[in-house]
Length: 323
Image (cartoon, rainbow, N blue to C red; front, top):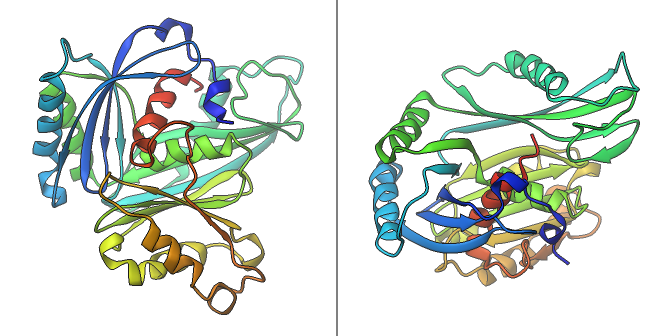
């Protein structure tokens, strides 16, 4: 059963159309969605492949042009999802005793905690472009969104993403050129990871496989531990385990994920070769596993094609309005 069937989108956005732009590993997708009772409805989509990061700006404009050719109107409200490039992510769990436990958590309280954590994250030549409380605990009860709930002992998992100023300038240029009102920009892998976390999958490596590149999101103890792109994709499938080994090695042996969840960056990516290579990988010898992890390509979002997983997860992030 899909978790997304259980989500109730913000009623103010029900029935209204919005734009999702996803910059993938080798393709830009621009899609119009309409808010529904339980899930977003895809109206139309335009796409454009690109061969290098320098071509992303033009590819984005062409994807939106392709969408405009089949749509009456392009919505101005939008969410932007990004992959690859220079990316650093970190999750810090802020634990504290609430001074007024009988009063519900409000946006101001969450905002102050997130601001304190964000200001402490330093990275040379990188700037924060996305920060959010990705998950939380109140009195040891795991929750997605603490706002409106009461409790004494709080633990807020603060997720911070940073990128290079040049990339952020390009995103701003895209927004300005298309005259959009972007409500949020985030790593696509964050949106996909939250989809799985809400299915109570607390530990996993979620791997987006492209033709020439891949991007892995490492989930640990119910948090998004790290998102890491690397330059090996389907074309170099014989070596893809090198990238996976680098990501998994970030965790101590006893915390390494028992599930590797694969999805494709675009339609032309065949995941079968990657599954075969990972099933034959020496997990015990190379990474100290007692038992090889499960390798799966099951749908992350029920009824959604593997290559549209990121796009659709971003649409849910737009609707959920959880932060």
